Structure formats: C-alpha cells, structure tokens
Image 1: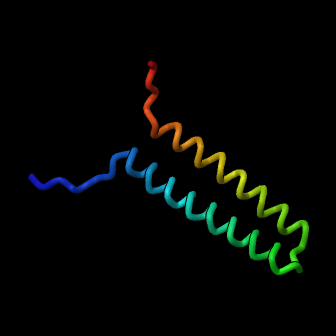
Image 2: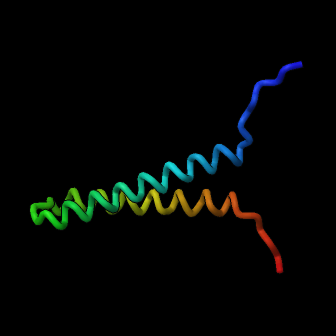
Length: 72
C-alpha cells in the first residue's frame, strides 16, 4: 500500500510562520527605505507600520501555538 505524504498541521504552521517573518522583514526594509529617501508619504509609512504590527501579532500567535506549554 502506497500512502501519499501529507504535511502535519504543525509543519504547515511552521511554513506559514516563516512566510510571515519574511513578509515582516520585507515591510521593515521598505519602511526604512522610504524614511531614508526622505520623500515618504506619512500616510503610506503609517499604513505599512500598522501592517507590520498585524504581522507581528500573527507571528506571536503562531509561535505560541507551536511552543508547548511547560508548567515548571
């Protein structure tokens, strides 16, 4: 019997986590580039920063789900 390889939900969460971290870094670099350029639109920078914060929250939630609760 041949079984198809399926991803464990934890593996899916790890892949999603890496994608969110990458997107967070990209936004950080974009914000720094806009601010360094000096011609950045205040509303655009503010919107990007809010998006970055939302990503940070999503990253924290996934990390919490992946980290086992250890009661010491």
